[in-house]
Image (cartoon, rainbow, N blue to C red; front, side, top):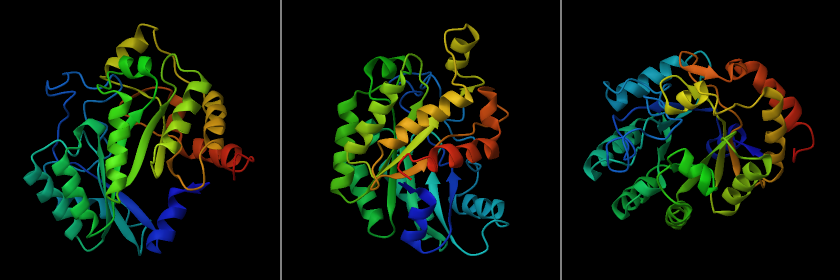
Length: 294
């Protein structure tokens, strides 16, 4: 298997950190185009709780992000990660302005754009291809699941062929694609989750993020959880599922994430996920070093 840190060192020849940026975007699942509540699990911050302040310029956000990790990174590069909300959902001129400002920073080695597959128009593809000629561009797509019932429950707002088309068009233009998958969605079995991972790995995506389902304060999923309609995975259960998922990931698909630690100010459940160091140590010992393709 290939983990992100190893991939970054091979690609850029040094330690690389992501700086999460906030371009002040919104989402069609929030502004009324598709809906107003967002995906059922999505926080008010559009999954951008760890992003920088949208009130600052992109350059200022990059400098603030560098300062946060200056104790960890003496020499190295950074990835400008447009994280909060849907980062291709704006007029093309605005996208060009933000992406270009990030690209022009001398310490930025690559651009990573988190978005929805249904928000990648032809002109967005053209812009991303143009940016990719300057520095590497990654596009991170929020797929979460391949199963229609789960997609409807979380209010994803698009069908699976939309994802397939987006991956095909992005890869045709030489752009790296990372698919986001949530493990632990209500009603999904381990086999269902493994099927999603297997599908992603065969879809043309070059990377995958595996994310534990979190219950965050202020989300509609919290309401479901409070009513007893949703349960969360135990730590042991998550580790067991992760083992099965990692088994089906081929060596040419980079693993960008194996868990997730929600903002502790918003985290309702599972609380065990807040102990990031402990969870990561278990993953290294039991998933990465237990014969699951390591």
